[in-house]
Image 1 (cartoon, rainbow, N blue to C red):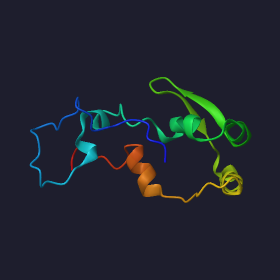
Image 2 (tube, helix red, strand yellow):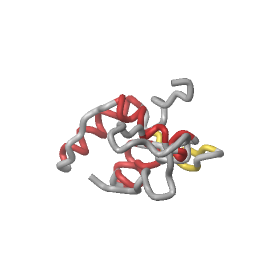
Image 3 (spheres, rainbow, N blue to C red):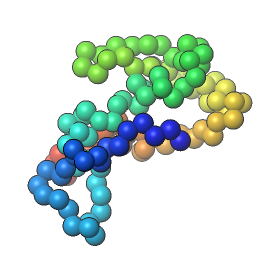
Image 4 (cartoon, rainbow, N blue to C red):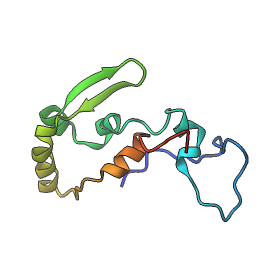
Length: 111
């Protein structure tokens, strides 16, 4: 695993008050997560995590006005990319729930 940044650094805080030591940690309550500034889009992180030759073969660079470039990998290329990664020794599994958390899709300001 590659550690890219710390979402719970000293500059982060909870909106209302600091939680008690025995309260569970909710990452979606961090200001940077709630405001969409962190973590980077999963599709943007692909530029750092995927080997460059696989980015070129399986993905296409796209642009958003607010978040910059990201790597789009069409669903019909997913199987080939997974096979190539496994051939190179990567352990690959699909976890849509985790991806939705990392992309902020599980966050709801209404609770």
